[in-house]
Picture: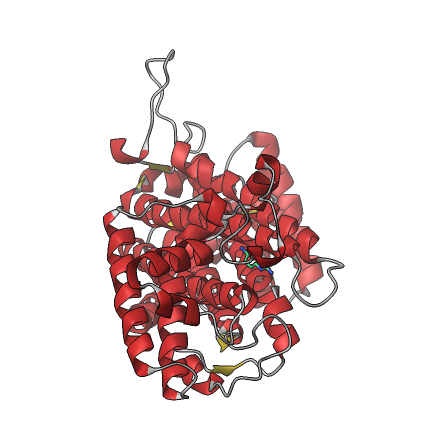
Length: 459
Ligand code: ARG
């Protein structure tokens, strides 16, 4: 038989495959709460504007609240024949309250309904992610606070570069997480407009009050163009973009956790709670969660690329293609939320091995820049010349496989006669770290200020 909702001009029902390709309820039922909220606001507005009676609105309200309870309790029977979350809810409403249910869809289409639900769902998602990013930041700051004076090698090209404070390293991820929060906040601000009342595409002849529904649903304003209201999906693309960037940012620290927990680095370890074993190698402790966070951008970027591709070239206004928007978004948000929880958990869990970090920080001539800087400061040489002098001294030390500080003064003076014994005071990883007191630099003096600023900011 044909659809009870739209079957008036049909004689027969859809083929099984038609029904299968058309149904979205398995995916969009995740928006049931938002769908009910949207319908409650719409029904209330219809009654206040006199489009439906207050008795009908009351019946609709009662029925919708009952449906909400049924869904929460897991007592709701979802039907693929009813296509999507919207028609499942409406059909159930009809079963509960009868005739008034049929008045709910006045001055509304599933096109504005689904856009409304989706915006509400994404708004909640942005809020959850913001809170999770804040938790991740707090975990980073808590570790940073304990390790301001811990020196470690800073890398460029993954080659030992200059010594840095472990806290400085961790706080760099707090900064990027703050920008991620900013991206979600921007997306949230722009998506928080109401499409409800745009109806199918052209608006409606009924005397509705779109400001009223927008306000009731916490939107900043109704969308000003009905075609745009039902056709736009850039709001979802924007959240997905923020999610993809955030996932990529997380993957970088995840990769460092993987590296640091290797025997080769030996900088850190994860407890049993964040490690897994091997089914064949009894000795193994693997950082699977960090590896999975490293991998998540694959799926999340895939979601973004997928939805960009669906929306590309779609003419106005609504096309059924747009039904393919929910699955990639839900997938990406689920993945990102799990990744954020895992990163916050692992960050708090990490034990750092200070001696190994400090030893590594002093290796590989990480104090060569400090030597060059000393030559500039004390001997008045141009930096380019000082760079060359330091490089020659490094070459000499490298030949003997000893650190700079173990060269004799004579040896250094053979390269640059002006060098005197004061030079030794700058030749250590710790001295190097402590000397970098410029704003934003790694000196513990500066880093302590940053820890305090973040603690105040994150509350
Ligand atoms: N399930 C649809 C979606 O997710 C709802 C809108 C359907 N609109 C329509 N004209 N068939 O996009």
